[in-house]
Image (cartoon, rainbow, N blue to C red; front, side):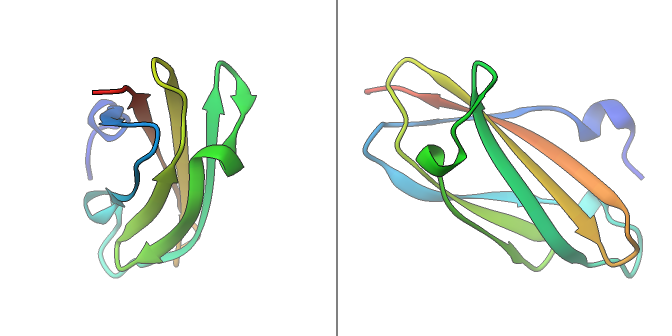
Length: 104
């Protein structure tokens, strides 16, 4: 099993305000042998305010990964995305992402 510090590293990605594309969050290395993902919860926030519907178009489980379709955002701002999955064993695993929105 991964150590706690490595598991909670925050992945960062950059997008432009008008882009809309999928981001994959892989939980393979966090799952115990034989476990599969059974449900997912997700949220996006900006400075503590929930902005999920403005930033996440959809979210789905694809094998041992979660596919998040991101959209929108205001150039110069950073958004925190949180993905919380529940496995078939009832374990919960969380991953945070930082989305930087920039006009390039």
